[in-house]
Image (cartoon, rainbow, N blue to C red; front, side, top):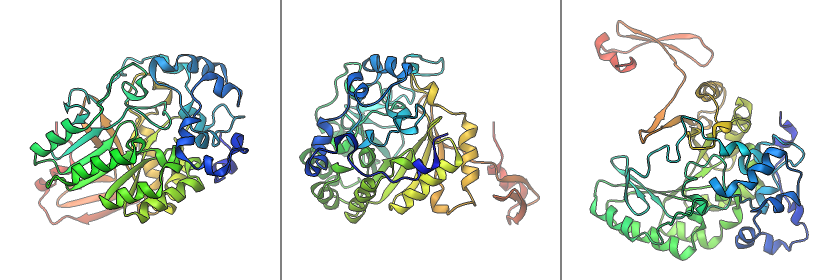
Length: 389
């Protein structure tokens, strides 16, 4: 088990890069330029286990290796099962594709209606703006396109996507993702947000990002001014472990919040990373301290090469049961499965309904105790609580 005292340590410092001038260290471009991207880069700084060595040798066949200096400092180099290490250092397990796995498990290619634009839900679209990330999560749902590991091209502009959105007035919600949209230049991000705000029926703009975790230095005053100018721009931050909640991330979240961006979190349930209720509770508490509202816990998508990271679905239900009633409601996210084949997000909850009969519903509370509630409706009107074929 990863030592609790290390989980509780809020990391700060430059580690292997202690001799780097702080001004350079805090420049996000320096962080990008000095990412660890090869087996040699890692081997000079830590001892890898055989599975990692082979994984690094094959990384470009599935998903490239990239770790920012900031994030590398969070790895416990003496613990092969360190939860930070498991998320970013390739393992040879990635070269195995389980029968249920797909390269595009969510069928995004099928629902692509313009270059980089996925239209699945009635009033929402997903804009994929880049194939680049500051670091590459080994559980990445879009490993088929991210990092150019398979040599795919990516749209260089968003004109086609914006034209489609203008023509479809049912679209009120746009999620910017990729890759990581916050790796775009300030100028391009400004132009995209301005283009969306110029469309009258677009009410809600979101950005999905892992930048505050991998490279909080990117959250500059200039970036915050852009978000403020086109706000409110909601920010969904991908955070998986309490050790990722650094002092630098906290400062980045404060800058985003003060710029008027509401903050939420998305967490992927991963074996050996956050599949213990105590770990997940610690993460949710830290997020709230950073002004981030826990939003989703995702069951890991069955993307090719991730079987070694996926937990049983029951583990997610167990974690929600351990949170609900035992901590603040604000600290309890929704556990969902993004249904394979493009079915969309399906909420998965513990069963708190014991029975429905005679206009009364019997509930089980967080302690397992039964309580009844008079619904005021005839028995037949309560069919919503029953499973229909």
